[in-house]
Each structure stands twice: as C-alpha cells, then as structure tokens.
Length: 212
Image 1 (cartoon, rainbow, N blue to C red):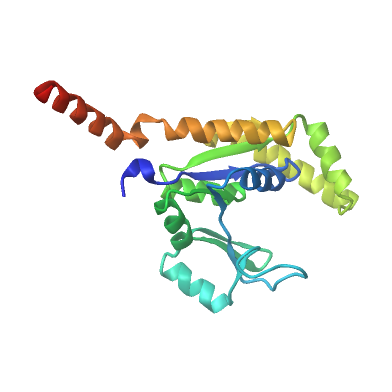
Image 2 (cartoon, rainbow, N blue to C red):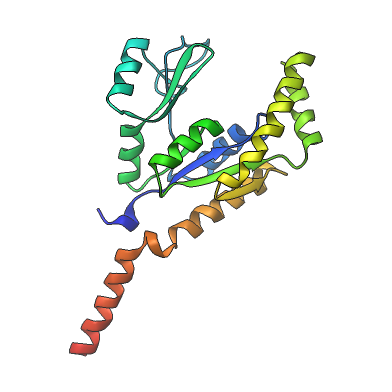
C-alpha cells in the first residue's frame, strides 16, 4: 500500500469537561472514514456497556501478557484497573486507509507520541475556565470536593497544550468538528505524507517530455 493511502492517527485529549467525547462522537457520525479506537480494560463492564463497542474486557493476566508482548500503543493503571490501546486494531484500520481517533488522557497521548511519530495530536480547550467549571457542575455527578479536584487538575492539564500539534477551542461542537475536519484535510496534503504521489507526478512529467 502506498503511504498516501494510509489513514491518519488523530489523538484527541483535553481536560475533563472540555467536550472531547461529544466532539469525537459527532466527528464519527459525520465522517464515514473515521473510526474511534476501542480500548482494552481489566475492569468489569458497567450496565449498558457492550464488548467491542465501549471496551474490550479482558482479564488482568491477559492484559499483562499483552503488555509483555508490546501489544499496546499506550497503557496505564487507573484506580487499580488497566487500560490500553491495542496496536493491531489501530494498524489494521490505518492500513485500510481509515482515519483513527484516539480519545485518551494526556499521559496516554504522550506515550503514543513516542511510538507514533506521524500521529496528529489535538488538544481540546474550553472557551474559558469559568465555562469549564459550569460544564462540570451541569453534569450533576460531582461533589464540591471532587469538583475542586477536577478543576485544579484541568489547570494543570492545560499546561501540556504545547506538547500537541493543534489546539481547538470548543465554543460549539459544530465549530470544533469543522476545525478538526480541516486539520485532517490539511494533514492529508502534507508533503511528507504524499511523497510517493509527488514522485509519481514527476515521473509522469518526465515521461511526457520524453515521448510527447
């Protein structure tokens, strides 16, 4: 397969409440050539979660075996459970020319950056910290203590924006989706992604000059 036919890996991160999940869902619904990578986890399924759609649910032993085999693009232990992004699924999709979205935390994104040099890293920002606070409050699932913890964490996470290629402010989901679509389109036109197309064009021109 030629390199310019390969899909693009898009890694999306941002603080809790910035709207990452909503944006990713809207992107996939609007674009047929986009796939959200499904993570593997050792935690038990929650009510309504479906195997292969929400997560791949595997045993702790199986997860650690896969870690030893270097089967994950990134992995981490969170609150006693393991989470990881399977390499094989992502590579299969990319090889088929499908663009793959990884919606993961900053720690995971930085690990992916070490292993996927051609990945595109997008940081989702809230319009303001006050708006972020209001979005978290509206969820209605936070105590005052956990709200402050999340808010302090968000301040710290925003400091990592310089590690990313792009920053998208989520004023509205529609605008954020449009911006990310534009990023993907621009990335498809990057010279280092379409070297073979350029070579083919040059060879075609030479052929025309010789035999025209």
